[in-house]
Length: 260
Ligand SMILES: NC(=O)c1ccc[n+]([C@@H]2O[C@H](COP(=O)([O-])OP(=O)(O)OC[C@H]3O[C@@H](n4cnc5c(N)ncnc54)[C@H](O)[C@@H]3O)[C@@H](O)[C@H]2O)c1
Image (cartoon, rainbow, N blue to C red; front, top):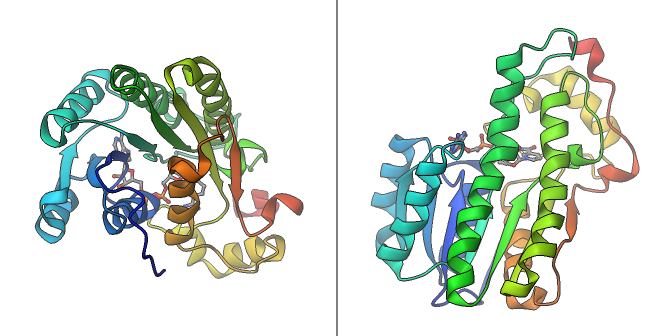
């Protein structure tokens, strides 16, 4: 995608899950648009490679978003290194599937801790710094599954529905601190997270029957809408959920039970 704007000149950003997929696309687009960027991710090896490629406007930090200590350190390192924190993208996520009657407690905890608690902890400490600084913008990555159930996906869909409500609650509480909080709800995006689904012919066909655009998105197609919500063009937008799903929300989820 061509970009000629410098909307994020002199802005400092955190991107959790920034070493892959949607997070990586957001990191790249922020750098193109002039930001200083800290990518927070578990994948140290990939962060090291990115540091070599991306230069001084980039910092990689190994973080587990389910650890409050890690998140506090992430924010303080960002502020020490780049002098502030203006925008934050809470992207890190993954899931362990299973139908409710079979789902192990630890698999529920893994998914909900990562997808929901991780966003809560990130927002908490990002916003504490933004408050001191006079404001900022937070964009959380929820999912179409915030609205639509998915067979064997109860932990993920519940956590993602939670992210949408957490976003609205954040928008309500943080408006007085001049912090905007919004959510992106992606449909199917080609990334390492979905590779096994997209590459399986039958599963892919089941998705394509339902997605009106008849294709998955590329991660870059999430970055544009996410940066819009963080930019001053969205200065009066807070508590919003932006579906970025090729119109999938109009047609319903495929019946995935036949694949279990
Ligand atoms: N790909 C899709 O179709 C899709 C659709 C809707 C929503 N989403 C959401 O978008 C987000 C990004 O997904 P993606 O497709 O880019 O996945 P991805 O697997 O490509 O990237 C996720 C990144 O998060 C990191 N991560 C995982 N656990 C972490 C932790 N505890 N702490 C810090 N980092 C951690 C991983 O190392 C990885 O780099 C997720 O929240 C996902 O639920 C994805």
